[in-house]
Length: 223
Image (cartoon, rainbow, N blue to C red; front, side):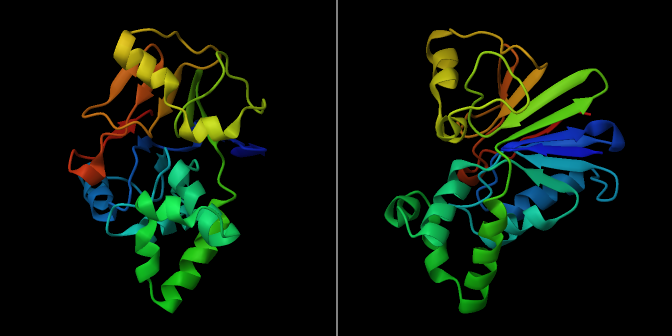
């Protein structure tokens, strides 16, 4: 099997793909992504693109970005913005918090688009929170904000809210230079915490370069 699902984890055998890329937070910047894929000559038949989450909110093409989860060449972990949308649209919870954080675009959809987005959010609810990619002897782990233990194990339980919201590890590294390598994988890739350029601390790479704020969209090749 090329993919194995275990709860909120998805394991991908990367050797079946020609190239594999990981993209930072999109936040509705669909055209920016398409331009970036054109520049790297992305092969939609043989390559794979993995998102660190936060496909939606603040940008101008949120429906198109959310629809990426239906594409065979695309995988994503669930970000906090997808979670806020799921809570608001599917569960009628915390709508004000979502709208305040960029979700007000939903109020301007026509009836057909609203139906489509609702269906897409039902699919987004099933997105994993952690993706493990195995490439030869190399193991890469992708999550939205953090992996909240000091050693990685596929399938182990975590406080899931922290996986999509936590910035403590990032802030400690940036502000005081404290931290450590996370055991159990070669590289961890996160988004969520905007930084002008990708930040590498120990074996943790942060790639949310604030595309929606005009700072460019980072795409990291891992194979």
